[in-house]
Image (cartoon, rainbow, N blue to C red; front, side, top):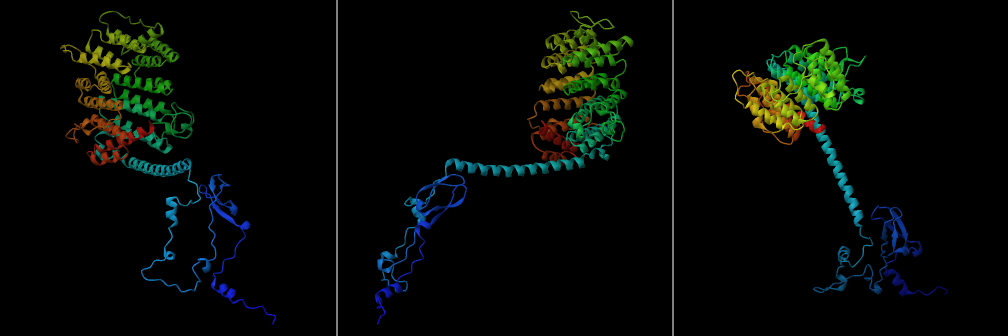
Length: 587
């Protein structure tokens, strides 16, 4: 009797209605946030929807998105009816309740709704792009590094394999070619700045000297000996290079090991000085022409002065020149010191030459450079100074005052003196010196070209060959092939003529290193097995390959090794191209 009456309608509604989920109080709800820039995650209070906030990490401003709240469906208010209610559809009739909603993606694209995220600023986009580019660049750099490292390893493998080619049976009858190969690989090793490669370089240079000592006498052999002396400078160094064992000292070091000697197994360390002395001794003993030895000494003096080692060349002269030749060659070195502005050193040389001449006159050749040096320093020597006269000078006066004017860098006066009437040989020697030393050699080359084009008197003395070699070389450097060819054709010795041809090409290529050169620029004889294949042919191909290697990469070395005539020409292309790549890396 006390029981509450049953409300049937309420019970039916409870059964038929969809039960809502447990609701969380508004004051306790939060909105999950993720920063669009730094991806930092945090939450914001529920009532911050639609408002702008700052990321706690990167401080980027962004909007708190509006949250959609799901409500319980009520069939009485259009909620779709009870979940178990039966739905009937009429054929060919579309109800509004059956239509599909427009997708959120479409609404976003059309701008009807806002995704709640601000657009990324341009600055941030650029930063992201920069990071991507840096990553790509780093990947490319890494690939290039390992690619180049691989190529260098290939070059080193070729070095180990091909440096022994010169000792093969193929080159036993070609000592000059064998020496050139040893010199090429020696230079490559010496410039690696590696103690082990330095040992190889010293050994290869020793082999080159041995080959030259065993070669028949010839001006091309003498010229290559001079080139070997120049290459030995690749071994010298100071400071950290010595401490690291990458170089040897310039002068003997007391108590040091044997690496500095020309033979690795020697016990006394003599530095670069001892190496040069051995080469000059060989040149003197093998009868090398004085003019070639003197030109080598002058060139060495300029190189050593530039390296701050002028005393090294002065200590070599006693090895490469006889007592009668010493006053003149020492005075020539004194003139090089004077031109470089080293006046105290030049004065010391001039005094030393005066002592030589006071104790051992007369000399051969005449000490014309000593006269020039004394004139420059206002000194009076132990023998009467050569006087300058008008008209045709004596041979001694021509050489003396040409050298003096060149030392004072008065090229016009030097040219006038060298060109005065006299024998063709006297004029050619003076003009060749001017072409070698003057900053602008063209007028000297032009004047010398006129001299060799003059009709020859039957009793005229022959022109010495070494000055012609110098003129051909300088004409090649300034790009005057016609004059270079005329100087070359005036050389009587076929071997030196071939060498001069190659040297003119070498100088031309050195002056224009960016040009790719055709093989036809260094002509080879038809018969490579006979005497026609001279040192000059190998010298030309060697330098052609070197400049082309400079303008390409180490793959050029393999190309020449595979395609140039084997076995006597290809090795010069292989090492020449490798040296060209090395030149590019160290320029």
